[in-house]
Length: 117
Image 1 (cartoon, one colour):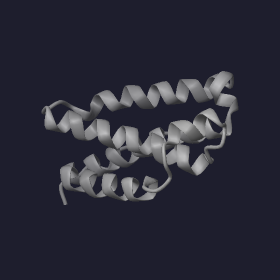
Image 2 (cartoon, one colour; image 1 turned 135 degrees about the horizontal axis):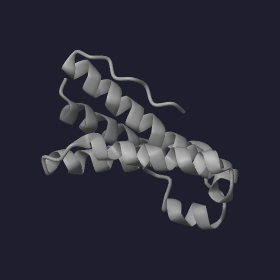
Image 3 (cartoon, helix red, strand yellow; image 1 turned 180 degrees about the vertical axis):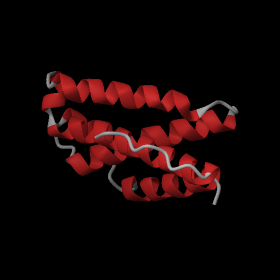
Image 4 (cartoon, helix red, strand yellow; image 1 turned 30 degrees about the vertical axis):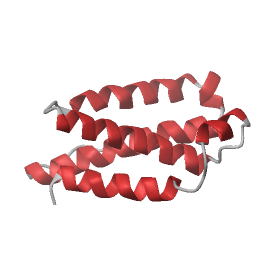
């Protein structure tokens, strides 16, 4: 299965998981977002971004910068890095980038190195 098809399936799975939850921004304002929801949102952000990049014929390597930002926030241990729901969001970002790297490695025949969580 090619990356574009894999992304479509993954996005459909995430959208199905998010469906029926209502506006997640309202849950954020109420500080009621469960960590699993935020992790799913982080994953969705990266998957959608990867799809847009592929549609424009651009490299997915720019997503590594998103992973670097997520690692920097988590390493800082301040601000949102103290909030378990936002920690989960950034872990979702990192996991999605790791999955994309692994997918790219499988397609090229070279196993991609995992992203450190």
